[in-house]
Image (cartoon, rainbow, N blue to C red; front, side):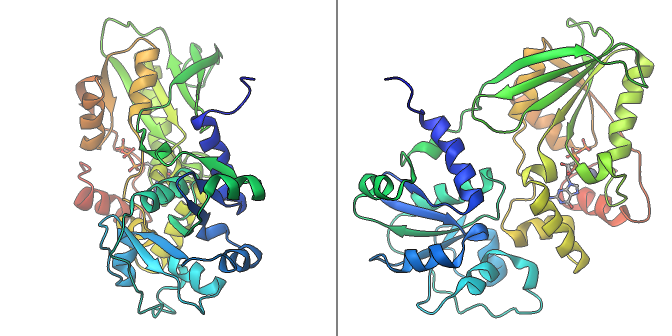
Amino acid sequence: MGFSPDVTERLARARADLRMGVPVVFDNGLVILAAETLDSTRLTALRSLPGDPVLVITGWRAQTLKARAYDGDVARIRLPADAALPWIRAVADPADDLRNPMKGPLQSLREGSAAMHRAAIALCKAARLLPAALTIEVADAAAFAAAQNLTLIPADAMDNDALSPLHPIISARLPLEVSDAGRLHIFRPDDGAEEHYAVEIGHPDRAKPVLSRLHSACFTGDLLGSLKCDCGPQLRGALAQMGAEGAGVLLYLNQEGRGIGLANKMRAYSLQDQGFDTVDANHRLGFEDDERDFRIGADILKRLGFDAVRLLTNNPAKVDRMQACGIRVCDRVPLKVGENRHNHDYLATKAAKSGHLL
Ligand SMILES: Nc1nc2c(ncn2[C@@H]2O[C@H](COP(=O)(O)OP(=O)(O)OP(=O)(O)O)[C@@H](O)[C@H]2O)c(=O)[nH]1
Ligand SMILES: [Zn+2]
């Protein structure tokens, strides 16, 4: 009839399912549940199935837990017969690592392919959950999904790494403190993920490099005035500079916590209170230190008609990634504002480990 959801749409459903604790089924036979949202009812149901449940974690998390990661970026841990919900949570979530370091010995699987387990981790990350999934194989995936009313997704659904097209939805005049001539543009991706925004100041000449900032959302810094980072002052500093020049474009990308989501960023903050720095905290949670997709920013710039920028950033990786995405970075304009006694170590870590320029 033509109403059925396509793969992209089913993936959006799958992300929502995982966030609620509902299993998702890959059509080649792997059932997955996010460890973070797993409850005891579904754990019992999963244990009633024939087959051996496997807990998938990332290579980073495995390193912290001293488990073997034969698959490199992921590790498949055999679920012990007596493992209950708190044990699964403790493997997935580092909150109590220091208080309760012994989860193992963890038995990692070596045989067979990890391709679908890798896809399960990618789906948990896309759902902004902890990157850990409980999985089990079923003989007839389509029948199982139909009988249990679960979302069925193609085995290769996560292989497509293309950027989901972003569409301009609306733009409207928005007078700002820094400039009367402000305009806010809303962009919405096809895949049901977060919207992103562009703030245009004045009427930048498309034929010249535009003063530009790619700002990643930071609820704590941008809105609450958190002193743990420099995001709020950077946001306001960038807008002020654009206002003073009379032209510029600031992209506000909803990639909170360098792409791990606000809940996971707060988990990282909690680990930072235990003594880990910003990079180590991400790794202990099982994430890369930076999970952002900078193609989004490049795509929005192009859609607005810009192909060359003077980029306000202290992050050389951002410059490289923009260039790789076809945006010419004619100049890097430093944005050194907002250092205080609370974020001194954070900024020093970014300089030491992530290549930020001080
Ligand atoms: N995961 C994580 N994210 C953080 C932390 N502190 C700030 N962020 C996020 O980091 C993002 C800002 O990135 P930064 O690395 O500060 O800066 P950048 O955008 O790479 O570089 P600049 O252009 O120089 O600001 C925002 O999404 C913040 O929410 C943290 O400790 N952990
Ligand atoms: Zn911040």
